[in-house]
View 1 (tube, rainbow, N blue to C red):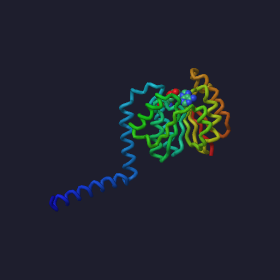
View 2: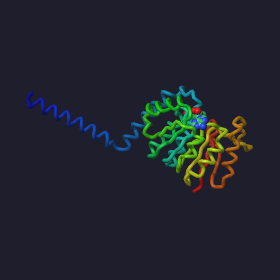
View 3: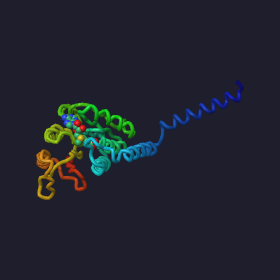
View 4: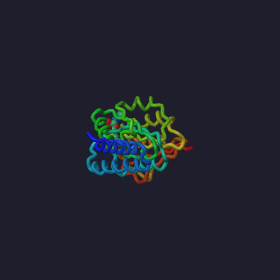
Length: 225
Ligand SMILES: C[S@@+](CC[C@H](N)C(=O)[O-])C[C@H]1O[C@@H](n2cnc3c(N)ncnc32)[C@H](O)[C@@H]1O
């Protein structure tokens, strides 16, 4: 082998190392662009494929906005299913520098959620637990600045009692499928969550309302600073 070959080989090697090193030091904006594109592609492909009690797209967008506009970074979700809402939340967290812990009791859904998180390129932002949230919501130490409840509705009040003390001032507790028992927004078909809503409204340290654009009644409770 002559010197020419050796020089070409060395130049190729140097170029490869240069590219590899460069990837590790991509500017933050470039990295975020890569994440955004992958998530958008995944959500586009999945648009009509969510069949496991997942939130509708409109409600996913609302969760994204709450996390992103408030710069939240320590998020918890109760009720992963196959991961639609978690993907919206984790996408926002990829921009704020945060991480989501999400809990699911059903093994098949948990496994599918893990595959979805990988495909969406968000697995690095999500700690997905296969567990009974009745126990884990008590055990996780927090603090959290964002919580989304979307598991067994009749247990919402208990989740709230366990999690409210772990929410930071300025943080937010959200819950899906909540019935506002007040006169202006009588939904009437989510009876067991009305109790949760009344409880959250009774807490002087929180401002609670149903998000006006939510499709299936997202209750939003901000903890006062
Ligand atoms: C409405 S689905 C969640 C949908 C999900 N947030 C989404 O948008 O993709 C409710 C999920 O909560 C789970 N679940 C019910 N009880 C639970 C419990 N005690 N602990 C953890 N998960 C539970 C169910 O298995 C179900 O997958």
